[in-house]
Amino acid sequence: MSIFRKMYEDLQHVCYIWRCELKQVLKDEGVLIFFIVVPIVYPLLYSWIYNNETVHEVPVCVVDMSNTGLSREFVRKCDASPDVRVAYYAQDLDEGKSLVSRQLVKGIYFIPPDFETNLLRMKQGIVSVYCDMSLMLTYKAIYQTSMLVSMEMGKQIQTKMSGLYTSREEAISARPLEYEDVPLFNPKGGYGSFILPAVLILILQQTLVLGIGLSAGTAREENLLGALVPVGDKRYESSFAIVFGKALVYFMIYAVMGAWLVAGVPRLFHFPQLATWQSLLTIMLPYTLACIFFGIVVSCLVKYRENVMLIMVFASVPMLFMTGISWPQSNIPSWLQGVSWLFPSTFGARAYVRMNSMGATLYDVLTEYRILWIQAGAYFLLAVAVYRFQILRARRYAKDRLLFLKRNREARTLNS
Image (tube, rainbow, N blue to C red; front, side, top):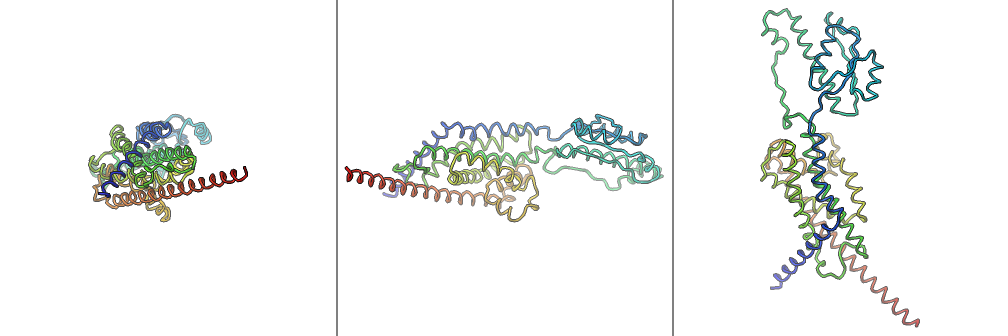
């Protein structure tokens, strides 16, 4: 009978801590911003910026020193492509560089005087491409367009010089092996569909940790003893009840926010969605729990509520690279890959991208799935241990404080 009474008391304590934490979250504007406003607005802003996926009509400058029929054909075909727009013609390369420095154009096509002469003499013609490397997408558009146009003109020259009689023979000579370019897992070939799914998963972790850290920092600042738990309140005796009650509040909020991030935003901006809602639920459950308990542990390790913002904002970009989505996982040093195992976003982003963007099944991401559950369990036990330490330290501080006051009172009595 005592076991059931103990379970009933623990359940009451969990419900009490859940109610207190929910009140704390609702009255703290900073926590509400990170729990609700940021997960809703930030993905919309980020996705809207990259909604076009690719850049088109990038302005370029042409320095045509050849001024021949073939050079003009090259310029005309580049201008006719969807990615490049010939905005200026310069007299020399220095004038073109001046246009780039003033950001009027993003690149230069420099055609030397002997361009057509070399081609007619069966030599290789050269077109120099100068690009503004500050933006990867514009560089890609300018360089790729020049490559495609040069390849197309090369095929035309090759068929004319071949001396063949039929169009079929010319086609086979110019392109003996037929191929088709199909971008896998990214039909639009855009930057948004490539990187934003991993960013959405990282946003879930970062906002959770920031909100939990702010809530714990507020509780620590309001408590004069400097602990995260009130001293003398029997309902805060169980570290398990504290962690479970707080985690229940965060899980309730991020059951909604998580669905918005992994299902609502991709559907709204037409990102690839190949996973079913059952598969997403299966992978997001351990990931959300791992992020919650990870956030609770981090909140106990920082002293001031502002510190958690500095730490997580600083670590956002390294965490994104360590997922292996924006940078090849094989090129990440082994020691840094070991560090990445500490963060739930590493395996959460990999599993989500492979399932939702690449069509993988749960069996294909079974390793990430198991590690997420291991992280959830490990961080839960660590959070319980940290709160147990907080309770013992608060008790010891309270006893020392009472003993100090008692001795002062006795000393004043003797002196009087």
